[in-house]
Length: 493
Image (tube, rainbow, N blue to C red; front, side):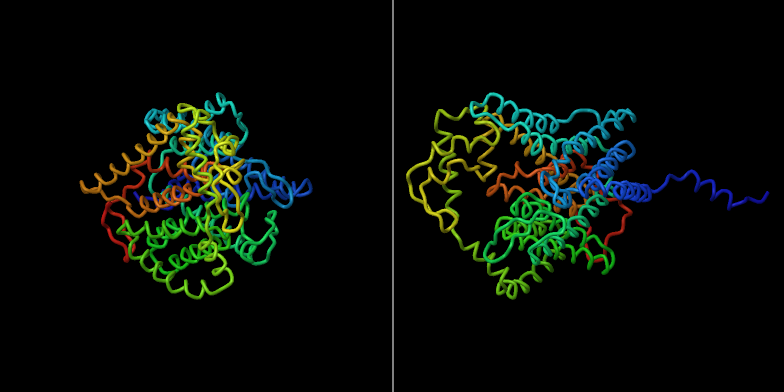
């Protein structure tokens, strides 16, 4: 009997689920249609309402894509800033609980006990977040509960959302490439904003630094923008090294150039230094080493003409400036740790160092920012600590330090597991591991100069990447039959 192969193929086609990208495209078109209907009510409303509708629907259908959209929008939608001249509230107040609820709902529906089972890292993450609330509750200096929720708790929800997802390596790579495309586009817009001195989307920060108007895009300040941009160079290097043909390599290389150019236009020393540090960090991966060396060589050649231009010379001049203001903050913080104003268990409460900093300074004369003179007491008074590694013991107390060490220990344990898998013959995508770790290293380096826990966008990325490394080891395993780009190596971590 003859078999009708066309009927079989049609039947298989009918059983095949619609590709996720097709559904996402349909959802985007729907969101755009809703946005066009709301343009009359205001440009910001026309953006935020479709975004909220889209993420809610995605969370019900695919929490994975809800997380992807939530992270991608951070490159465009301000967290408590102006868009089209209208103030935008912190959208993570909505999106954080939505994506977490969607991930939990799907895990419960699938009765996935492996995903639902608590893990050690979960306790440290939740404990750190709760302890910050407790510290503010007992602090005699008060606390800003709303800011703590927006800057700490809502970004932290993304950790649990990603933790509850079932991810494979293809999905991890996919959402990283989506994020790289988003940040590359935003970098182009930020560079244009700095060159033109204005922005069609955002409220431009007034003032010049070394003759350059700093770029900040959707971020509250240019140092927030520099911190966020510093997270992505190692992942662009991974995208370049993982590409199979020169067109894709050129595309991701262009994105890397856009991010580095935007980073220099923020006029922030810490962000640029962290970007260069995290590029060098990629040398730890055999898979990324050749690409990284090529990029370092190109940057070395470009450095000479860039340093002689107005933007380059202005930024390099900032590197030459002294920064004793942070010396004043650190002096006041150390004096605080020795005083009875500091609670060794609870600390001062989150972001409350500035409430007592002026009382713990000294009359020692310092030069702040290379120009403003004053005493340690005058400079430190009412200022944030600008060093998150010192702020944790100061503001979270001894228990907060133990919880932070627990978080680092969980991450170290998983990295050790990667190493053992590689030694036992497992094929690890070492480039993906090292590039994501490079982002965390960049954020940790900037944390020495900035209160990164006040940056909701970067904290969101921190918790997502931490969840990937601490909870999804299997997502970094290579298929033994997988082909690799010809210029990469198959060595493991």
